Image 1 (spheres, chains in turn yellow, blue):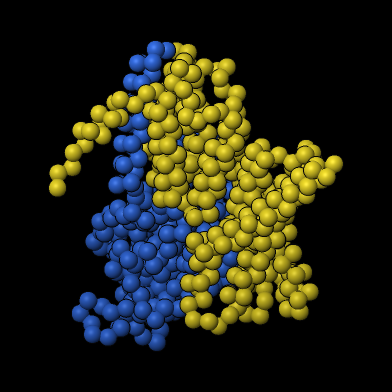
Image 2 (tube, helix red, strand yellow; image 1 turned 120 degrees about the vertical axis):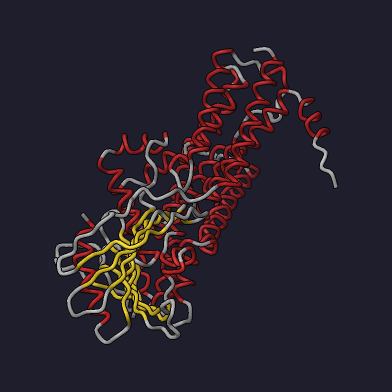
Length: 293
Length: 231
């Protein structure tokens, strides 16, 4: 069978500016997700996918836009081109897990906006820019030693107290928890930072896309998101602790699987489900209250 | 900007993005290690001879740099064969001695066991050194007639084997680098001037004929070797 690409190229050439812009945006999103999938752990890929989806959800501009609205200034278009060329050059350099994977989505979106729209038309896209800007900000927080030290010690302390209350002889100090023959040090992927990042992203996307009646209620839900992520992570660490101390065959394999593998995503997934349920429940009550009044 | 010019710009950027994405999909592999194996070694109590080198092997998940075999001889003991092999992984989860053995057959072990050597100083809070011992068959042998000892030396100087310990050391190293000059470190990493070279270690294997004193012999060579390679 002969593959004939001519009609596809003709169709591509006949597309108007708005459709081409959307195609380029889709290609950049796919590129960013592919890079994360190739170079990083599943948890980080999910965070990036959530950020892209959130950026799309909070965008207040009608998509696809009409081609007549795409009238960039020469300066803006040049800046956008430079940004997108810079992104492609940086993507070309990536050869493993790389900090820039979190900054490139923001630069890609800025490049896409500048290349196609005048500055005065960018207002509806600001929430999307904010969501993607959270990725490098949260990443810098992730590398802040006081934050991670506090997080790891708090997680370990909650786990020790919970196990003690359930009647298990858990011991340890600082970020270390031991039980029977096994023990874990809450560190790296165990700190739950990636879960916090994911739930916080969801809370902020919800706050922009489906805001509560009062401003403080959304801030409270951000706090709930962080607490929920920490608590569910404690459950995950407890499972790892029991696995490490158990005598089951292939316990090291199961440990690594729930430590950094795809099954470890079950726990942030559960936290997300609980958070969404809580958010919807509170919103329903607010809507019911409004209808009553 | 005129609509025709905008369409040309968008089409060109689209073509470039597709090409870069396809290129990543096809040739995405682990970078080559930055660390190089020393050409010669001087170990007190041993006469060291450089043997053949091992060719570099680029791979998708893990890349091996140019390795080197050495022969260590001491009076009254069987000779030890030392292999040094720089290793670099694409991401942390793939950095392990098992991945090295999958690419380099001379690192395959059977009946393995892990030995932890605690730190000498109580002030040293780092985790204990990890050494992996196991049996192997010599090229002409019919049974498991060789004893091998393996570990991986990370940039901080720690000797680790398990994936968790490698992760711990690698993250500790990255955090220390970022703590020393945060703005400069983040900027250089974002711009691509500095790469994540903490996903790298020097795989090391000591090998001798199996016997009652074989383990002691390997450990006696390991102590001065560790000192030299850590510096």
